Structure formats: C-alpha cells, structure tokens
Length: 203
Image (cartoon, rainbow, N blue to C red):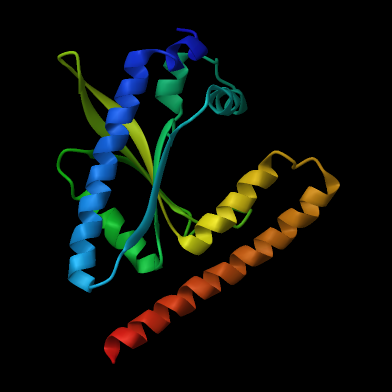
C-alpha cells in the first residue's frame, strides 16, 4: 500500500494513539510508584509523537527500501515514540527494568546510547516494545519506541536535531564538533549530579 495513504488512514492513527496512551499510562504508574518509594519526583516530563511521512520515507530511502507500508512495518521501529525525561541516570535504568517486567508488552529491541553514545555524542536509552492494540475485534501488535533520558541529554538532543537539517553547511560542521564536546561535559555533569544526590540521601 502507498505509504502516504496508509499513514493517513483513520484506523492506523487510532491504533498509534491507543498504543501511546497505554505506554504513557504505564510510565505514569511507574513514576507514581518510584516517587512514593524515593520521596521525590522521578519523571519530570512526557512527550510523544507519530513520525511524519517525510521522516519515514527518508529513513526507508537510507536503508535502500521501497517507500511502502509493508517495508515500514518491517523495518522502521520508531514510527510511534514516547519519551520520558528524568533528572538522574540511575532512574532511567530503573524505569527501563520496570517496563521490561510488564507482562502485557514485549521487549523487541534495546539500544543503550548512554553507555554507548553515538559518534555525534547523542545519549539516550531506547527501548522498542511490541504493544497489543485491540481494534474492531482484532488484536494487533504495534511497535513503540520509548526514549528515556535526562534533562541535560534532552536539551542536547534538541540542538543536535536542529543541526541534522544543516549538515552540509560548513559552519554546521564546526558546531557539530563543539556540540560533541558539550555532550562529554553533560555526561560528566549527569554523573556528578547523581553522586551529589546519593551523598544527600546518605546524610
């Protein structure tokens, strides 16, 4: 089926929105449990998105695949995305562990860009889940990418995203190098902030 037509179908959009709602509910419950356990807010913000046609088509082209719905469903794992932003890196792994323990969803793939950052310096924990969506008496498993990152990782990623569209510009290359240096600084800050929190908790 033509990719653009498929993405505009009402049932596709409804399934994606249902999957997002389910994953957000799980994250909110996890946040409530951890916040009660530790006496502090763990997840500070949530966001979600359904990838645009242009973005999906570009990804398929990079993979050398046809731009149709069948190839998208097989090879593009992040069409639907949910993001949770925390203050501390250890909370990201606790949330990931609790999500993976959920019995009604399946972990499909895990990419740890915190311990193994991308060349650009990008850091985030990505979990691809298969989530069951009931629609018109049919259960369909859809893939949802969950991104877990700290606030510092998040604002860095926002700058990196803006830069992606200007990579051919000479100044953009210089900015890219500077941004990578900042990624290393942010990693150190995240680590030191976590150490400080642990020292405060030990008092």
